[in-house]
Image (cartoon, rainbow, N blue to C red):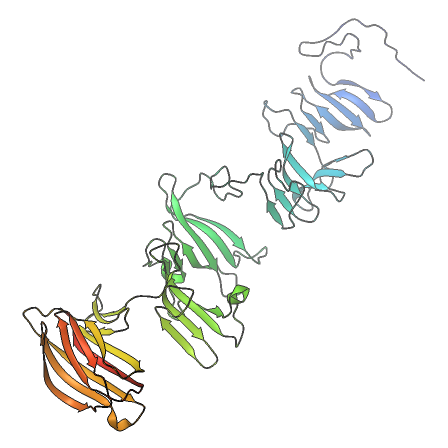
Length: 489
């Protein structure tokens, strides 16, 4: 067996080489080296380059810059003196590096593949891949196809990982306002273009399709300064590979626009614009309250409410319409009809002479007292039950005629239980000014001492009094009257 034993050799080093106190010098210059065993070598193919070989082939190279190549003769890929590189050249399929612990329980690797035409990072065993910065976990890929992103320190559920395909978490306490620093997911950065769209797409696709069936997107409507834009929602109603159509939009000033309303928005900021020529807005759910009210059970009673905010925020809203759809009735209540809402005090109806008049003209009003005014004519209906046949007065506020006069029309009727022949009925026109009244003539009049009769008066210039006088028969009975007059003063 041949051996070389080195005990003491004089120092020898070139400029830039390590100063080894003892060593072996094999010539000087390039293309020098020596063989080790069968087919193994240590070789310098050029100045300041060292290679190691096996099976009569180069396996590892250290360049003059200090880059290391394994299985390649060119150990520099970045071609930048600011980097030190380790390059592994692949075999017939690719190159790989794998790490494992002492007992092989956890095995990790990274490799390239010409067959898959891709680069891979993997665990060979059933373990997650965890990414850390500053030795704190920031991202984890579990073996059950879930990805967890987030800084976990301080999180009260730091040991919990979600089961969704992508889970983004943050430390406690979580942000209480919206900011870039507190964002859990940001789409877009400093790129900006007018009408630019930043979409997130959903649903089926394949390698040849150009679209997916649905999306949520941000669209830039003003690219100035830090810009602004709208939030868009789109779907498609066909199964072909076509671009989804915008169905819903929230504008930068808070408008909510459906379907085609985005091209011609008519609502104001914070309003809803439903562009549909069929069922524009549908309301109503099951009667009964609780979770049941958020369902629509077939054949079950339904109800719904359209309301407006009350002047006082703590109050229930004011009813516009309440709807009850029952077995044999579809009931529409305008202005009330439900204990859940405040009722309207007045309901007015307006019309206009043409299609371009704003405001319009009031044509009819139902007041808080239930009386109706149409085109300035007040129409008072009053029903009653008289249990003791005494004198009864009903007073109503009317305009002060001043130096003018006003005309009134009265229809009144009452009958007690004893006989229909002894009732009190009257239709009459009468005029008034101030406290003066005068009958302009009766249409019909029926009266009897047992039932009493009907009269009218004005106690003051703004009050009309309708009177049913006492009858001699103290018997109960029903009746009503109607009073009309000009209220348009």
